[in-house]
Image (cartoon, rainbow, N blue to C red; front, side, top):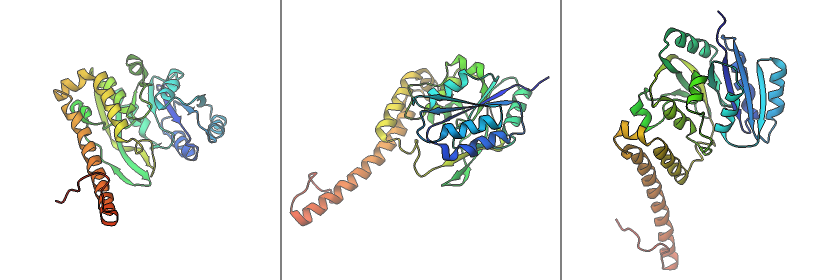
Amino acid sequence: MRDPIVSIIVPCYNQAQYLNEALQSVLDQTYENWECIIISDGSLDNTQEIAENWVKKDKRFRYYYQQNAGVSSARNLGIRNSIGEYILPLDGDDKIAQNYIQQAIKAFENDESLKLVYCKAEKFGDETGNWNLAPFSLKALALDNMIFCSAVYRKRDWELVRGYDDNMQEGLEDWEFWIAFLKNGGNVLCLDITGFYYRIKLVSRQKKLDTVIKDKLFNYLSIKHADFFVQHLGSFGALNNNLLKEREAFSIKLKSEKFVLDLFCKTFFGFTIFGKINKK
């Protein structure tokens, strides 16, 4: 019997400088029955040129373009046009190990109860070393996301949750998808191999998320998946605690900056801008 097709979905936005590495890691797979769909999400660089070179190199690669609409929309476009039984998202600046797909499909074949398979991960780029993610549980997932985007799952399960949420254009879309994907049940397996390589950049989309944007995204999550958070946390308290810690850290930084500016003005000009200086 022929191995099932795995559709590797590669959205990219201005990541042309990294795309060859990502696609080479796809071509190097020991598992051969795959297709790779590359989606340019309105890229302004030479993503199209690089993608088309790969399409010429191997007929298993395909390329699509859309006006910039965010990574969720790009992934959904790729998956809608895929023919595989299984889906593996891969961002255009990351990589997968040669045996990752083979080991994931083997796990699905050995255990029909599995809904999601992922693996251990390693960082590379501006930071290196193991990416020590917390062990999976639904309660842990309610507190934070411990599954990177490049996990393997069945296309039919993506259809059941109606794909990635196009509204989450500013980040945390993976977390929302895994909550929608897993909150109603299904077993999860983390393979005992390092199969995913996550590129760390000094400036990235996640690092650009400020407190206000994170606050908005958390609030959106807590409303959309209120049943999930109440079931596993008892309330939104634990989720809000994460926000509170971020707000407190930001507040401490802001107060420190105000103190220095006030002290400077009082010393040289005899007045303060923000009022009383804390003398403690």
